[in-house]
Image (cartoon, rainbow, N blue to C red):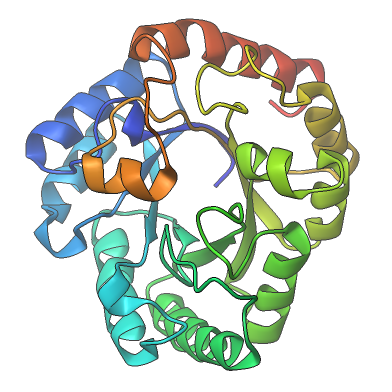
Length: 282
């Protein structure tokens, strides 16, 4: 998962044949090392079509998801295991390297009270089973810490580390996101340092989820700390331009975060790449 990537929401959240062709062509145009595919409906994905496109364009892929309410791991662990197994197999069929994101719960899952031990016990059981299944296919699993408004279970780097260490599988890693860190961490550097032993993937996302470099995320602090820990994982730019209503609801995206894809890619991407080069990460 090394290199510079982009979440395919820049072009589409519907991973059908047309969406795959549009997003992969866009990623190739901007010379990305990999793409992150949102698996909102894994069973419907034409894996061979995607794999052929990726191979043709010499592009690598990571997949991501949040569990649907019918398969929230904290309360419906068996359904979550089944859901993740399908997504893992689809990721492998597409030649993806990892399945990451809110693989322990839903985007918009909140009980109104702090997480319970029983919820974490269920999540551990789900991720243990998923990790064993993923190992058969050579797939890694990422646990993404997201902010308190999207999920009540894993909000901080420390909580993500706790989940990963409780599962104890060598193919399960921590996935951080600068947007969420900007809300939850007591300094972005602290989150990165806490996760350093398990951190393999990071979303580079601005404070308003718009164009990187035009908000208040402390980019120099983030890049300097990544350099200090010798980070070698995936750097994935994420900005939510094309959101279907059900996803926008979970993410609380109520207005455009940027004018269009070109504004983000033509301004935010060079900013992030230049910072990465400045700190020796690419």
